[in-house]
Every structure is written in C-alpha cells, then in structure tokens.
Image 1: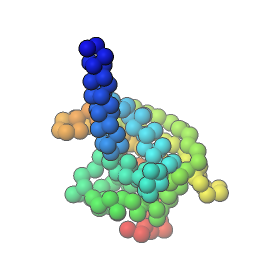
Image 2 (image 1 turned 180 degrees about the vertical axis):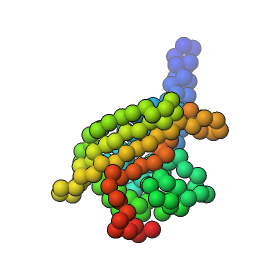
Image 3 (image 1 turned 135 degrees about the vertical axis):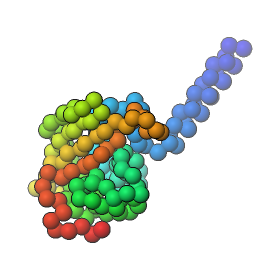
Image 4 (image 1 turned 30 degrees about the vertical axis):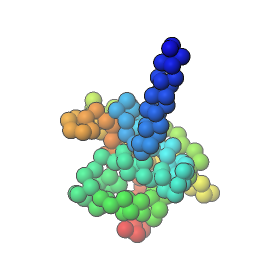
Length: 168
C-alpha cells in the first residue's frame, strides 16, 4: 500500500511539472528585478530557440505597457500593442544587437525606489565590432493580476537608436 501512495504522488507530481512546462515563459512572482532582466537577456541571446523570435516573445510577455495605448518602452511613443510591431523594433534598429548576442556585462544596477529598478548592460553582438549599451527599467506592480511581479517599463538604447528611422 505504501508503494501505491508513492506512485500516486510521483504521478501527480509529474503531471504538475508537465502543466508548468506548457505555461509560456514570462514573469513569475518569485523573480527579483535582477533575475527578470537576466532571463530576458538570456532569451534574447538564444532568440531563435526553440523557434524563431522566441526570445522577443519572452520580452513581450515581460513588457509592462498597456497594449491599447502608445508606449515609451523603447523611448519614443510607439503603438506596440501588436506583437509584430514590437518584434520589428528588434530587427530594424540598433536593438538587433541583442538578438543572438555573444556576451553581456552588467555595468550598473540601481534600486531607484522600492518598486523601481534600473540596470545598464553592455552587449557584444554576433556581428564583428557590434556592441551597444542598454538600460532596463523594471517596475514592480501593485494591485491587479500582476501584483508583485517585476515587469519591464522600458528598454532604452544609450544612443540615438531611431535617428535612421524604424521600419515600423
């Protein structure tokens, strides 16, 4: 009888693990602000695994903007409600260095307020001599369905990333 209970618990445990795997990767209540940034950068480093632009999908899930309003997530006001518009920013601007990047180094981290965190990161891209600096601003939501979660308020390029225009 004891073995039967263990088998039942193992089966139940496996089923729970399986259902967790099916949940799309994104913000989790137990992630710190720093972990949330790290997971997003890791997703972009392996952007096309397990499928094309999966890393960008992960960032879209962490994005703390209202899809029905214009956003300053990338600096200038953009309508980013549709994933395709969000995705294009990464492929057609200085943000593309993040896709499949080879190296990253945290330059600075600052807890601005109890619910706001900033981190500057140096990125070495996949192409020769490609390097850029980006700043993540994370905010911890209070109230609603995202209460306690760290979401990305903005991801800014240190330079004038849109001077050449954006295919948007």
